[in-house]
Picture 1 (cartoon, rainbow, N blue to C red):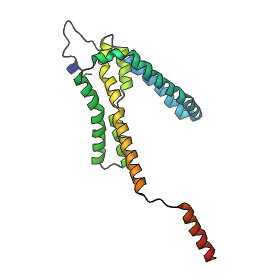
Picture 2 (cartoon, one colour; picture 1 turned 135 degrees about the horizontal axis):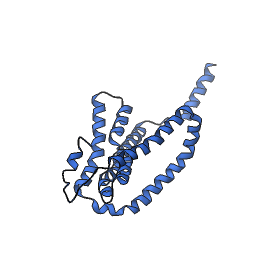
Picture 3 (cartoon, one colour; picture 1 turned 180 degrees about the vertical axis):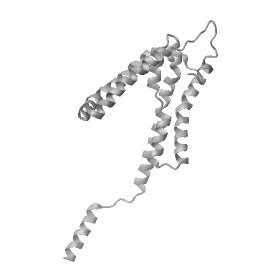
Picture 4 (cartoon, rainbow, N blue to C red; picture 1 turned 30 degrees about the vertical axis):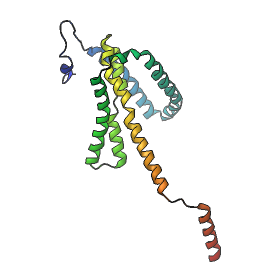
Length: 200
């Protein structure tokens, strides 16, 4: 905020004055960090409880994701009216450039393929959920919706590079399996059995 914040606040005038609610932002971060630390403590000192909680939380998390995506989209349809081409372009380029930068950097430094994939994903995937929540609860309307627009766009465009990469991986694997000559296991087993009998 201190390094780049003034760049975004240059349009502030006496009529339109954007005030950054630092106290609300810090409070929101604490609300996120404290449960996270509790979860880390439970996983470290009570792994059995953590394993049971993980089994219980999986279906609950799936339900919450479906609920939030469905009703969150319906309740925020008005935000599509705020979309502009520069905002769409920025939201599109941020995750894609992150994936490419992480991938090429890992390749330049000679990382293994598994590490290249992990570094690219970690660089490209942004914590848009945290950003949206902090902006929504920190600013007053309509500043909250306007400020959360870019994270929402980024969240919408983030899955596409991952799905594209996964599709290419599956396609290449399928082609390799097609080119690999199939072996008749029963025929090989019969040959092995015949050779064993003749040797005895």
